Image (cartoon, one colour):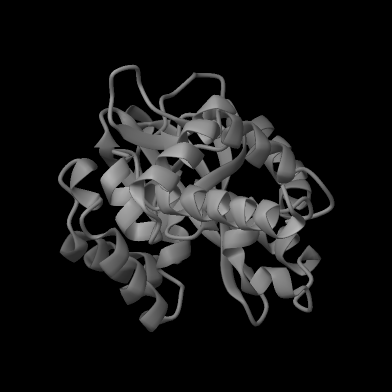
Length: 271
Protein backbone atom coordinates (compact mmCIF):
# COMPACT_ATOMS: atom_id res chain seq x y z
CA UNK A 1 0.00 0.00 0.00
CA UNK A 2 1.42 3.41 -0.97
CA UNK A 3 1.83 6.14 1.61
CA UNK A 4 -0.89 8.15 -0.12
CA UNK A 5 -3.40 5.30 0.00
CA UNK A 6 -2.49 4.53 3.61
CA UNK A 7 -3.06 8.14 4.60
CA UNK A 8 -6.36 8.22 2.70
CA UNK A 9 -7.56 5.09 4.48
CA UNK A 10 -6.62 6.52 7.87
CA UNK A 11 -8.39 9.80 7.08
CA UNK A 12 -11.53 7.90 6.09
CA UNK A 13 -11.43 5.76 9.24
CA UNK A 14 -11.14 8.86 11.44
CA UNK A 15 -13.94 10.54 9.50
CA UNK A 16 -16.20 7.53 10.12
CA UNK A 17 -15.37 7.59 13.83
CA UNK A 18 -16.40 11.26 13.93
CA UNK A 19 -19.67 10.48 12.12
CA UNK A 20 -20.55 7.66 14.51
CA UNK A 21 -19.58 9.79 17.53
CA UNK A 22 -22.12 12.41 16.44
CA UNK A 23 -24.75 9.67 16.04
CA UNK A 24 -25.43 9.52 19.76
CA UNK A 25 -26.37 6.56 21.94
CA UNK A 26 -28.75 5.10 19.35
CA UNK A 27 -25.95 4.65 16.85
CA UNK A 28 -26.15 4.89 13.06
CA UNK A 29 -26.90 2.44 10.27
CA UNK A 30 -24.49 1.75 7.42
CA UNK A 31 -26.70 3.77 5.07
CA UNK A 32 -26.74 6.76 7.43
CA UNK A 33 -22.98 6.60 7.92
CA UNK A 34 -22.32 6.40 4.19
CA UNK A 35 -24.61 9.36 3.51
CA UNK A 36 -23.07 11.53 6.23
CA UNK A 37 -19.49 10.66 5.31
CA UNK A 38 -19.88 10.86 1.55
CA UNK A 39 -18.38 7.38 1.10
CA UNK A 40 -20.03 4.64 -0.90
CA UNK A 41 -21.57 1.87 1.19
CA UNK A 42 -19.01 -0.78 0.17
CA UNK A 43 -16.05 1.36 1.24
CA UNK A 44 -17.79 2.47 4.44
CA UNK A 45 -18.72 -1.12 5.31
CA UNK A 46 -15.15 -2.35 4.80
CA UNK A 47 -13.70 0.32 7.08
CA UNK A 48 -16.45 -0.06 9.69
CA UNK A 49 -15.86 -3.81 9.86
CA UNK A 50 -12.18 -3.20 10.57
CA UNK A 51 -12.99 -0.61 13.26
CA UNK A 52 -15.39 -3.06 14.93
CA UNK A 53 -12.66 -5.70 14.86
CA UNK A 54 -10.35 -3.35 16.72
CA UNK A 55 -13.16 -2.50 19.22
CA UNK A 56 -13.07 1.16 18.18
CA UNK A 57 -16.69 0.71 17.12
CA UNK A 58 -19.31 -1.76 18.28
CA UNK A 59 -22.26 -3.42 16.59
CA UNK A 60 -24.41 -5.89 18.55
CA UNK A 61 -24.67 -9.36 17.05
CA UNK A 62 -27.43 -9.27 14.47
CA UNK A 63 -27.75 -5.50 14.87
CA UNK A 64 -27.45 -2.97 12.08
CA UNK A 65 -26.35 0.12 13.98
CA UNK A 66 -22.84 1.18 14.84
CA UNK A 67 -21.78 2.87 18.08
CA UNK A 68 -18.47 3.92 19.59
CA UNK A 69 -16.54 0.99 21.02
CA UNK A 70 -15.20 0.33 24.49
CA UNK A 71 -11.57 0.77 23.45
CA UNK A 72 -12.23 4.45 22.73
CA UNK A 73 -13.35 4.88 26.33
CA UNK A 74 -10.03 3.44 27.48
CA UNK A 75 -8.08 5.62 25.04
CA UNK A 76 -9.97 8.70 26.16
CA UNK A 77 -9.26 8.11 29.82
CA UNK A 78 -5.56 7.49 29.13
CA UNK A 79 -5.28 10.52 26.88
CA UNK A 80 -6.69 12.77 29.56
CA UNK A 81 -3.86 11.86 31.94
CA UNK A 82 -1.02 14.36 31.83
CA UNK A 83 -0.02 17.86 32.91
CA UNK A 84 -3.32 19.32 31.69
CA UNK A 85 -6.90 19.72 32.80
CA UNK A 86 -7.42 16.28 34.34
CA UNK A 87 -4.25 16.50 36.43
CA UNK A 88 -5.05 20.05 37.52
CA UNK A 89 -8.42 18.84 38.82
CA UNK A 90 -7.26 15.77 40.71
CA UNK A 91 -6.46 17.55 44.02
CA UNK A 92 -9.93 19.12 43.93
CA UNK A 93 -11.54 15.73 43.38
CA UNK A 94 -9.71 14.30 46.35
CA UNK A 95 -10.59 17.20 48.65
CA UNK A 96 -14.25 17.27 47.66
CA UNK A 97 -14.55 13.52 48.07
CA UNK A 98 -13.04 13.78 51.55
CA UNK A 99 -15.07 16.82 52.63
CA UNK A 100 -18.49 15.74 51.33
CA UNK A 101 -18.40 11.96 50.97
CA UNK A 102 -20.18 12.40 47.63
CA UNK A 103 -19.32 11.27 44.12
CA UNK A 104 -17.37 14.04 42.40
CA UNK A 105 -16.61 14.33 38.70
CA UNK A 106 -14.97 16.51 36.07
CA UNK A 107 -16.84 16.83 32.78
CA UNK A 108 -15.33 18.31 29.62
CA UNK A 109 -16.72 19.21 26.23
CA UNK A 110 -16.23 16.93 23.23
CA UNK A 111 -17.99 18.28 20.13
CA UNK A 112 -21.69 18.43 21.12
CA UNK A 113 -21.26 16.19 24.16
CA UNK A 114 -20.14 16.40 27.76
CA UNK A 115 -17.60 13.68 28.62
CA UNK A 116 -16.56 12.46 32.06
CA UNK A 117 -12.74 12.73 32.16
CA UNK A 118 -12.30 11.90 35.85
CA UNK A 119 -14.34 11.02 38.93
CA UNK A 120 -14.19 9.74 42.49
CA UNK A 121 -16.95 7.56 43.92
CA UNK A 122 -18.58 8.63 47.17
CA UNK A 123 -19.45 6.76 50.34
CA UNK A 124 -22.68 5.71 48.65
CA UNK A 125 -22.35 4.37 45.13
CA UNK A 126 -24.83 6.25 42.96
CA UNK A 127 -25.89 5.77 39.38
CA UNK A 128 -24.87 8.42 36.85
CA UNK A 129 -25.90 9.11 33.27
CA UNK A 130 -22.32 8.84 32.00
CA UNK A 131 -21.65 5.62 33.89
CA UNK A 132 -17.85 5.86 34.07
CA UNK A 133 -14.81 7.79 32.91
CA UNK A 134 -15.20 8.25 29.17
CA UNK A 135 -19.01 8.15 29.28
CA UNK A 136 -20.89 11.06 27.76
CA UNK A 137 -24.23 12.83 27.45
CA UNK A 138 -25.36 15.55 25.03
CA UNK A 139 -24.55 19.08 26.14
CA UNK A 140 -27.72 20.31 27.83
CA UNK A 141 -28.41 17.10 29.75
CA UNK A 142 -27.88 17.12 33.55
CA UNK A 143 -25.84 19.46 35.72
CA UNK A 144 -22.29 18.81 34.50
CA UNK A 145 -23.03 19.67 30.89
CA UNK A 146 -25.43 22.50 31.74
CA UNK A 147 -22.74 24.24 33.78
CA UNK A 148 -20.68 24.51 30.58
CA UNK A 149 -23.45 25.15 28.06
CA UNK A 150 -25.05 27.99 30.01
CA UNK A 151 -21.92 30.14 29.89
CA UNK A 152 -20.97 29.60 26.26
CA UNK A 153 -21.56 32.47 23.81
CA UNK A 154 -25.18 32.66 22.71
CA UNK A 155 -24.51 31.78 19.06
CA UNK A 156 -22.54 28.72 20.12
CA UNK A 157 -25.28 27.65 22.54
CA UNK A 158 -27.91 27.93 19.82
CA UNK A 159 -25.80 25.87 17.42
CA UNK A 160 -25.48 23.12 20.04
CA UNK A 161 -29.19 23.22 20.88
CA UNK A 162 -30.01 22.79 17.20
CA UNK A 163 -27.51 19.93 16.83
CA UNK A 164 -28.73 18.10 19.95
CA UNK A 165 -32.44 18.87 19.72
CA UNK A 166 -33.51 15.45 18.46
CA UNK A 167 -31.31 13.68 21.02
CA UNK A 168 -32.83 15.31 24.10
CA UNK A 169 -36.07 13.32 24.06
CA UNK A 170 -34.22 10.17 25.11
CA UNK A 171 -33.48 11.83 28.46
CA UNK A 172 -36.76 11.94 30.39
CA UNK A 173 -38.50 13.71 27.51
CA UNK A 174 -36.18 16.71 27.70
CA UNK A 175 -36.89 19.48 25.16
CA UNK A 176 -34.92 22.38 23.71
CA UNK A 177 -37.35 24.77 25.41
CA UNK A 178 -36.66 23.18 28.80
CA UNK A 179 -32.91 23.40 28.21
CA UNK A 180 -33.26 27.12 27.43
CA UNK A 181 -35.19 27.63 30.67
CA UNK A 182 -32.47 25.83 32.62
CA UNK A 183 -29.76 27.92 30.95
CA UNK A 184 -31.42 31.08 32.26
CA UNK A 185 -31.58 29.60 35.77
CA UNK A 186 -27.93 28.53 35.70
CA UNK A 187 -26.73 31.92 34.47
CA UNK A 188 -28.60 33.54 37.35
CA UNK A 189 -27.32 31.28 40.14
CA UNK A 190 -23.85 30.50 38.75
CA UNK A 191 -24.33 26.76 39.18
CA UNK A 192 -26.35 23.99 37.52
CA UNK A 193 -28.65 21.89 39.71
CA UNK A 194 -30.36 18.66 38.70
CA UNK A 195 -32.89 17.86 41.46
CA UNK A 196 -33.41 14.33 40.14
CA UNK A 197 -34.93 15.04 36.76
CA UNK A 198 -32.97 12.39 34.86
CA UNK A 199 -32.36 9.60 37.36
CA UNK A 200 -34.89 8.84 40.07
CA UNK A 201 -33.42 9.55 43.49
CA UNK A 202 -30.17 11.04 42.15
CA UNK A 203 -29.35 14.76 42.22
CA UNK A 204 -26.36 16.70 40.96
CA UNK A 205 -24.79 20.13 41.16
CA UNK A 206 -21.95 21.55 39.06
CA UNK A 207 -20.10 24.77 38.33
CA UNK A 208 -18.15 25.70 35.18
CA UNK A 209 -14.37 25.74 34.88
CA UNK A 210 -13.57 28.75 32.72
CA UNK A 211 -10.31 29.46 30.89
CA UNK A 212 -9.47 33.11 30.29
CA UNK A 213 -10.37 34.28 26.76
CA UNK A 214 -11.74 30.82 26.01
CA UNK A 215 -14.87 30.33 28.10
CA UNK A 216 -16.05 27.17 29.87
CA UNK A 217 -13.84 24.18 29.05
CA UNK A 218 -15.11 21.83 31.76
CA UNK A 219 -17.23 21.57 34.89
CA UNK A 220 -16.74 20.27 38.41
CA UNK A 221 -19.70 18.63 40.08
CA UNK A 222 -21.10 16.51 42.89
CA UNK A 223 -23.71 13.74 42.59
CA UNK A 224 -25.77 12.71 45.62
CA UNK A 225 -29.07 11.25 46.79
CA UNK A 226 -32.11 13.50 46.37
CA UNK A 227 -33.10 12.59 49.93
CA UNK A 228 -30.31 14.93 51.07
CA UNK A 229 -31.46 17.81 48.86
CA UNK A 230 -32.12 20.98 50.85
CA UNK A 231 -31.46 24.67 50.08
CA UNK A 232 -28.76 24.65 52.76
CA UNK A 233 -26.97 21.68 51.21
CA UNK A 234 -27.15 23.21 47.73
CA UNK A 235 -25.65 26.47 49.01
CA UNK A 236 -22.88 24.62 50.85
CA UNK A 237 -21.98 22.38 47.90
CA UNK A 238 -22.06 25.30 45.46
CA UNK A 239 -19.65 27.21 47.70
CA UNK A 240 -17.28 24.24 47.96
CA UNK A 241 -17.27 23.74 44.20
CA UNK A 242 -16.60 27.43 43.53
CA UNK A 243 -13.77 27.37 46.06
CA UNK A 244 -12.08 24.51 44.20
CA UNK A 245 -12.68 26.02 40.76
CA UNK A 246 -11.03 29.24 41.90
CA UNK A 247 -7.91 27.18 42.58
CA UNK A 248 -8.06 25.36 39.23
CA UNK A 249 -8.71 28.23 36.82
CA UNK A 250 -5.42 30.13 37.39
CA UNK A 251 -3.55 26.93 36.48
CA UNK A 252 -5.09 26.85 33.00
CA UNK A 253 -2.82 28.57 30.49
CA UNK A 254 -4.87 31.09 28.46
CA UNK A 255 -2.15 31.11 25.78
CA UNK A 256 -2.60 27.38 25.13
CA UNK A 257 -4.52 27.33 21.84
CA UNK A 258 -5.89 23.90 22.64
CA UNK A 259 -8.18 25.49 25.23
CA UNK A 260 -9.83 27.35 22.36
CA UNK A 261 -10.87 23.97 20.99
CA UNK A 262 -12.38 22.21 24.01
CA UNK A 263 -13.44 19.28 21.85
CA UNK A 264 -9.77 18.23 21.86
CA UNK A 265 -9.70 17.66 25.60
CA UNK A 266 -10.19 13.94 25.12
CA UNK A 267 -8.13 13.80 21.93
CA UNK A 268 -4.59 14.57 23.07
CA UNK A 269 -2.44 13.77 26.04
CA UNK A 270 -2.10 17.20 27.63
CA UNK A 271 -5.69 18.46 27.83
